[in-house]
Length: 248
Image 1 (cartoon, rainbow, N blue to C red):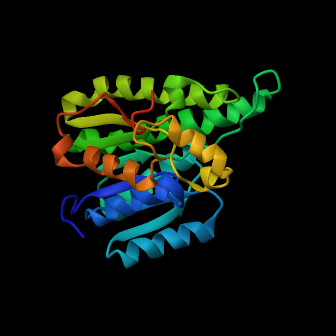
Image 2: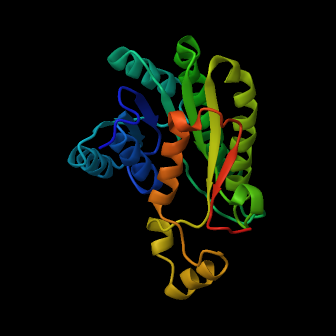
């Protein structure tokens, strides 16, 4: 345990597994009290709570679909009621509905935008209100390497993450004068549940495209989020930090 973020309250959306779980754990280890959201996998959320407790941290799960704007507002209001502050907001919740554009249904495009982009916007809107009053805060949005590279079959996902990066830069300019930093982290190919299901040959082919020669880990991403949430990153804002092993 560290005292780096002691006394601070963090919200991590989509924190029940994968990169979100790693972020919730990392912030809790740094001393923050963490509220993380999930939508349907209560068992995974309970496992994250247990992992935080075993690490000596403080954290709890809260069901919330970030695509529901009113639910986001209610979640932040509850955090403020319980803790009287919100110092860090991490927008990690995201979904994918991959398909080639000619086969993609409009509802699949809308669903991805609603969660990945509008959901991030809703959290930013709700979280920055108390931060503006305190004249301090950290907002960290999760983007993706596909926002820069593009990817066949992910026109909706790539568009949502490109929007997240634009949202990040715009919000940083809006709230910077009040001591709030807003940054994005763009992971590359990360070893998560989805990539673990790939055949070994496919994973090897991915690794060969990466100068560091390996897929990233959720912890690689979480450590960068921890830095951006800390006082050490007080003069970093409006940036997209690529965590991709050198992948172009």
